[in-house]
Length: 327
Image (cartoon, rainbow, N blue to C red; front, side):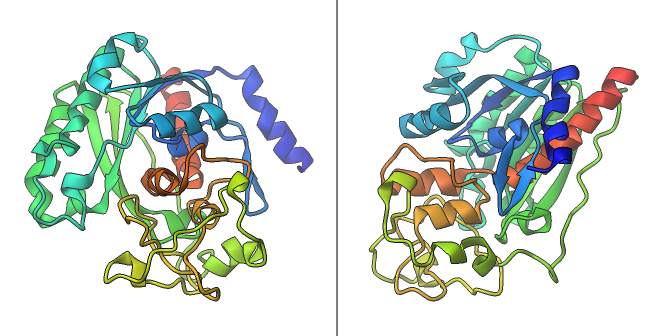
């Protein structure tokens, strides 16, 4: 680690620490980004002054992974059943509410009133209870599509009803150093009359996006090893995502959670990519180990917010909070 990185990693000790409540945390991709202090692709992402004081997910396997890699502050269970245990008056609320009903792959879905996506209402209630200075809600690009217009309007109105100024922006993870074309919407709520949230500037463009070869080529000769999640699906080709093959000179395709084993194929090897390779394409560091078997690991990796993208978002949140404290 460079001297500059070491200094940056420890500078938060003398700075105010901001409390975070995390919803629909999954394995902890967004939470790792907010914590910082990890290295991937030869770059160190310094520790940030955020403390995750309470987190929640309903999936037991994801909670095991979270506890191993993030911290013990995750409550496993239905959010509506455990909500009373969350702290009051925190600085930040983050969460990627379930998106299956509004996915770009579910054009006939039921939108924000669907059984899964309507869980955003739990985030609304959490914000009402905790009164954060800022909140971040992540969801799929499909939320911006015409057939989901009413869903977007309802979600934004429900957040606004809490007294927050709302903005949203579509991000491509590849613009921020993630070797994957992954477009996601981030909705940001800030308290009225305070500082403005300024989105992070992209670090890359289409000309210099990180490629699949750059991300995973060093794993090509490695034999299967379940201890580091280097295992892969043996599913046959299918007309869905399973027919796709990585292009070594481009970023990976979007890693999906509901791919039922049909994850994309390696660009040069006669197999699908491994979970370790998929985790790389999502920008997880190699020391992040998933406490689950193949199918559950596929779900956790695909559901996650790329930690590197989350780190950039977290820095923008930190800048907002610093300005907020000075107003």
